[in-house]
Length: 350
Ligand code: TA6
Image (tube, rainbow, N blue to C red; front, side, top):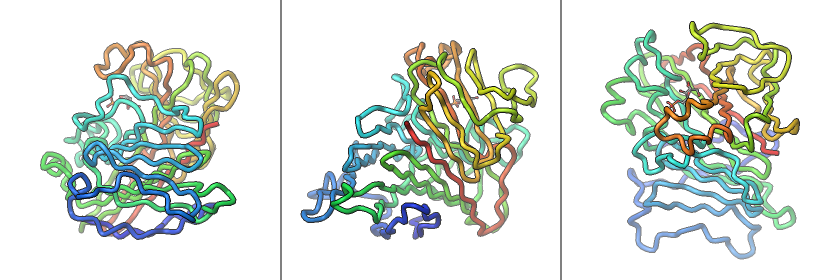
């Protein structure tokens, strides 16, 4: 199914000029088109534009802003595998053993979780799905790009580029369709800006009957050293601790969270779904995450359990990553036929 989408969620500060996606062929033939354009060449006389490249036999989309920031996304799972600042510093952690060839979920970057977070044996409709659902292991369609209207030669050209990806029931494997036989449509937007990365999801019930879902953006943030990290914005909040049996709901202290061992917690921040969460390194903010309609924040670090995760490398890599995952996973979002849900996050890297 091809999408006609509209900029539903205009960012208040960057009204995007929406460019209707090119009427893509059913199965994009980029790889097989004669004289395939590699990167959209900068048009002389126009302000510098974001450069887009489709590579790896049409399985990877990368974008670079005129100021140097870049993002790289696999069509497999619409998984962001790299996000760099203008100096080329990588902001995401990617396992050295991560598969990026579409053969299994990516260990690192920002994999997508939909329609279930984890496993839900007690939730009949999603109980047959694999851990974290099928979004991260399905091939998404690239729907097109739009750039900021603010691009002008005086301010250095495009200050952001939005890339849209779509997934619907038609894109699913027979196995996934059988496990979750509902008509749905997802539009996932990745907006690369000079100071941050925005990821937002529109979920639509394309069927005739209601269904429920969970959604989460499983961000692996790259850090210098886990022992020097503190996380603010989760104080005095209810959280589910998935490490200490029996799994229980607790309330966090009023001090910022520090990581001193295996950590796997689902927080419902007391400040609500828009309260910022900040990751500090040595007392200085390194990442700030602002959510929109994503009530929960999952914090995960496998610590030395990483040795039991086959595609986690290097084994000591747990010292250089922290997962801070914005999601709607505290319960189930229910969509009646034709209804739409939207949520997203902005990660600012400082
Ligand atoms: O990040 C939260 C979590 O649910 C953890 O429990 C851990 O399982 C992690 O996701 C990774 O899951 P994965 O299926 O990618 O190994």
